Length: 457
Image 1: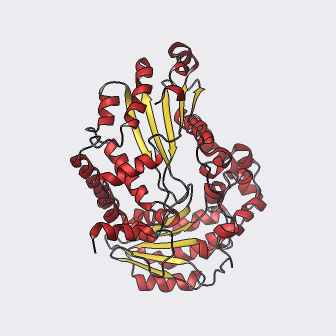
Image 2: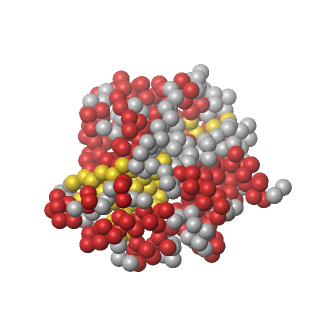
Image 3: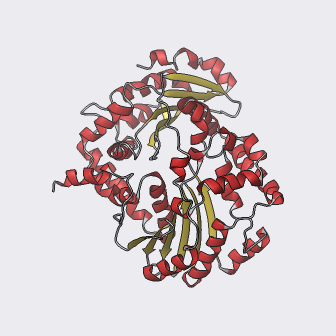
């Protein structure tokens, strides 16, 4: 079979469930009768084990009334449960097991992970089981944790880049902005109750909506047996949470829009441009092309860098794509030279309009970008404790097959694939652009006169 055709076939059904997914060497998969998927990654470099549970939950499941509660739920995970009924006992047990532990909340995944000595695997799995299945939401714990979560939000707001991100994304996603904002809403966070925590749990925290990963100096047969014994009686939901509580489709950006936000903390202007890009449900090849092109753009030799950074129009200009199951954003983030703000604004869109030109990047740059992505992948496999988090991200936002096929598929991306991606999602397509600037600079530089949709093409 043609190598490129094989890659396309592999990516055509990344969203579909597989009875036996493709996995790399030393990765082993099993689905328990309650629907819990278990992956064991044997890696014997160090005598440690990492266990992680990921749940298909996060910002994308949250309407305005629940904005930020998946994040608060993640924090409450480390408080109290049936086996350890207060945080002091919870923390003491982590110390007894010598654990390193944490959790994260993103757009489409909430995950929890522990790393400890390999001989503590059974104890670690039991500890995870108690926390994920039998949490206790005490009012006093929530009163302590709400300010902690809201404090993360407030720290973010002290960054002008974060303020700009909020302003732009409210325009990009409209009424569904909360489904792209994992940090949440101040009022929702500060008024959260144990009852609302139970709503999150009762909607999404089931074995058939979760992935358990055991990674490290372990034997996969032993790990499967222990997972079965400890998690096998966890009752499934009896429904697909994402069918019962479907995520609404994001409306396309109707028209290009520019905004300028004044902020006293913006010591220098920041600029941001965002398009709606591909997703893994509908255009897996587009997601690969997006990653490769973003890497090309980041090369010092790229036309993009030469036109904007080397010529002094900006100190930094990056283009990124976030791989997601539900509409991944494509964003330019820049720190323009205040003295050349007008020239910068014109040149950004001039470059964008030439992205799909046949000579915008060379064959050598295309290959270099692929090599960078492949090296980064290899480097990421050198730390066993990080393998689980990488796998669970792709399980939540794509599939296990997507994870396994990513590097072969990416290496087969062609110039035409990249051009098709650019023409489908970026060039000539509506976007939202924003700038954050302090009052004095705004008055002096008058960006509203040229940082506008009318002069962007």
